[in-house]
Amino acid sequence: MTVEISNLTKTFDGQKVLNDISFSVKQGEIVGFLGPNGAGKSTTMKLVTGFLNLESGNISINGNSISKYPDLIKNKIGYLPEHNPLYLDMRVTDYLNYCGSLQKMSSSEIINRTKEMIKVCGLNKEKHKFIGELSKGYRQRVGIAQAMIHDPEILILDEPTTGLDPNQIIEIRKLIKSLGKEKTVILSTHILPEVEATCDRILIINNGEIVADGTAEDLKSAATAQETIKLRIDCDEIKEVENLISKITGVLTVDIRNEETGEILVKSSSNLNITKSIFELCVKNQWILHEMTPNQTKLEDIFRNLTLN
Image: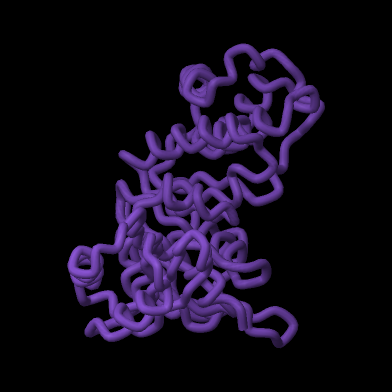
C-alpha cells in the first residue's frame, strides 16, 4: 500500500511543528525518517496513524483519505510508539491475545496470529513470562509483535531499536528487513548506521520541513561537489610534493598532515579523476606511493550539515 502525505502542517500552542511537508512511501519500501529531537518525526507518525487529528493537508492510503475513512485506514496500520506502552503485569501471550481482540479479530485469528508473531519475533522462550520480567530487547519484540498482530499492510515504527544492545539491534534489523519485503515501513531512529543497513530510502526532517529525500548514496552524492583523498608518499621533499600536486587541474587544496609519514590530504572537484594524475605524478618523480584512499562522505556528516541551524 502507498502512503501519500500532502502539504501536512501542524501547530502546538501557536508553534508550527510541521510546515507543509509532502512525501510518499510505496509498498515494499522501508523509509528511514531522521531528524533531531523536536524536528517533527513523532508528530508526523502520530498523524499518519490517526493518533493526532489533521490540522492542514492530507494523508491517504492507496487514495483513501484518513479524514474520510479513519477506521478503514487505522485497521491497515501497525504502530510501535517511541515509548513502547506495555502492560507489565500481563504475560506475553495474554497481552498479544488482548491486542488481537482490540483489533476485532476472531478468536481463531487471535490464536493463530499470536502463535505466528511469537515465532516471527523470537518470543517462544519468553511467551509465558510477565512482560515486566523481560529485558528491554524482548519488550521491543513484544511491541513489534503487537503492531503486527492484525497483519497490517503498513508499519510505523518509532525508535524500534532504542536501548537495545548490538546483538539485539542486529536481530531487530533482520526482522524489519524481512517485513519490509511485503509491507510499507516507515522507521524512525537516531542510529545512523542502522538507517544505512536497514532502509531503502532516507527522509531527513528539520524544524518541521523535509530537507533531504533519497537513498544514502543519493544524499552522499548531492551533499558535496568535492572529493577528499588521503595520500602517504615517501620522498625527500614533501613541500615539492605539495607544490606539484596543487598544480593538477581540479585540485582545490593540498594539506600536509604529517611530514614524517608523508601523510597528505587533497581536496578536489569530485567530477574529475584526480587519482590518475596523482599516480602519474608519483611515477614521473619516482616518489613511493604507500597509500591513496578516497575519503567517503558519511551519513552522519550529511545529517549534521542539514540539521545544525
